[in-house]
Image (cartoon, rainbow, N blue to C red; front, side, top):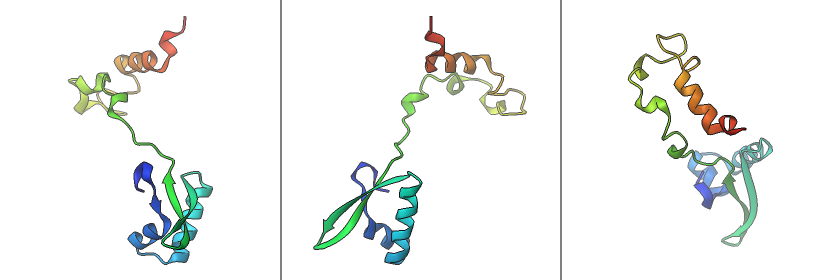
Length: 105
């Protein structure tokens, strides 16, 4: 999908090597699942749809201050490992502080 600018449905099925019919059905399924929005547009004298992804790109800003990024045990930290994100007090505290849970009075 071409970010905020969208992509023409006809361009999508061409890139994917699909027929027009297959591309249309695929776009309809994504729309039904809430993954995309489809806007009807006139392109080169023909009606088609412009497809827009509803997913937004994740930003690294949301995890920039995570204790995991500067943890010496990051290589040993996994579920069932020597260290675990499930039981990490530093990660738990950071999540609570950044989710609003730690700010409630």
